[in-house]
Picture (cartoon, rainbow, N blue to C red):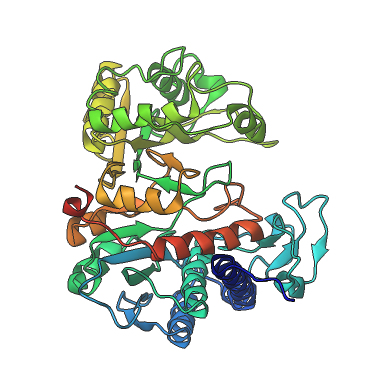
Length: 506
């Protein structure tokens, strides 16, 4: 006599088999997405180098999106169009989310890469390119491909991977007979990494097309732990340059040393006055005005940073500010030197007093801190140090009047972002990704959120999906296979989660 299997157990076994089959379908969809992703990486994408190459990326993407079931078209942007896509059959009963990514990449110098061409992907078995094996590219689709295998190519992570992740996530849902619980729109930028930021004009000209209830920016690296990562905001960025003027021309250091003022020393003393011996900016009021809601969130959200590992990675034993934690460092405005130049260097060093000395800086701002105000404070510190500021180059009268002459040129962006963690979009993303997610109050770098905030007027959240050690903006950029696959699954979960409204949460 055959044993009688209870109905509940039969249902459980059936559901278990269904889940297993669906998981296998998802794994297969992700693996089969990779060859097309590799083809995408073979397209050079440096906007400042070639507008024709960007057009090729846009044409290829538009065709690929249509082939995968999206409605897609290009948005005019001079010679370098952006790409817009949406999933068909949008429903007014569902909330709409606009996803942002960019297809352009940083410039490359082939000699700095451990491969012949940064636009010809290479598959390696680990992150240490000095010791790990180079594998056949065809191995990338193997079911037993290693999670720590890496695809090395420019834009492998920043930012072509998220483009392919969201396309693959939609394909994987289709393979499971499922559909998103939100309406999905996608804009793919062509100028994020260089060539002039034109996103503002494109968003303004297509405001109705891009209208959404929330914006998700898929850019930046995940937390170093590799756990799902949500970032609530980002710092703003601005740059300035100080030029200190010395003699009207290069002077002989033997004939005029001790007599003609050397602008390099004048500049060095000025720069030294900007910070105290603990690394804090000593300009009065520089840290004042930070948004208290942001500060409260920054202090209450625990981010599991590995400080020891961070220092080891960069080969440093201490921090710029005395005993500051990484997360606290990200929640304060910065004043950073990016370059110094005066006179000549090298074996043919000339014995001169240079005519000018130049220092370039960047400032990263946080919510509540305005770049223009910070520059005003810097200018005040320069004049307090005894310098007379000129607009371009000093006139003859100014040279004969002021012993210390300098100019200061500045340009900044108002793009500072902070979305409350208890907002509907905050709850949506953190709820979908689960308790294991790392919630970061603010990202140290900057992304172009301003046009969406000003024109779309929707809440914005950042969803990094690429490995923290991806070498973005640097030689040997890479995408970790395990992280790519996890990112697709994260997006599948997010897409299947309805976006609530404030009233629904109550």
